Length: 231
Image (cartoon, rainbow, N blue to C red; front, side):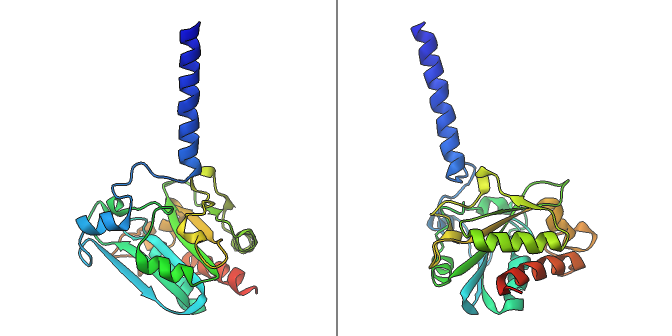
C-alpha cells in the first residue's frame, strides 16, 4: 500500500513539473539558453545576423526567431514596421540548414540590442511561427489584452483564422521579451506553417522566395496595422 502511495505521489510530482515547464513557456529542446551561449558558438553574419531600424519608438515590431528559424516572421515584422514607421528588430538564422539550432526561448531571449529597443517602447508585437502544415491559423497571446483584442478583430474581419493561444505559447510570462516594454505587456502572434507559407508565392517560404509575397501577406500586415493605428 505504501509503495502504491509513493508511486502516485511520484507521478503527481512529474505532472506538476511538466505543467510548470509549459506555464513558463520554456523550451527544453533549445541548444542555447542565452544569447551569450549562442554567440560563443555561432558566427555573426555567417550563421546569424541581427537587423534593426529605429522608427517611432512607441511601437516595436520584433521577430526574434527570424530568417530560417521560423520563416516568414522577419518579413512580416519588417513590412509592418515599414508601413507604420515603427521600430523594427529581428534576430535571423542564416545557416544553409538547421537554423532551428539558433532558437532561444522568448523568456530567455537576452540579446542586448533587442532588449534595449523593446524596453524603449510602449507597444510591442512579436511574430513567431509554430508547426502546422495543414491549418492556416494564428494564435494570439501576450499580456496586452486591449491590443490583442483589436488585432484579433481586424484579422478576423480580413478573413483570417485566429484564436487565443494555448498555455504552451501564450506569451503571458513576465520574462518574455514581448512583455518587457514600458507597460510590461505586449502581443505575441504564433502563426502556423500553413499560414506563413500562404504569404509567399507557390507556398514557398524558402529564403530565395520570400521576396515574392502574395496579397494574403499584405492583407495580414494591413489588418494588424489598422489595429495599431486604431482605424
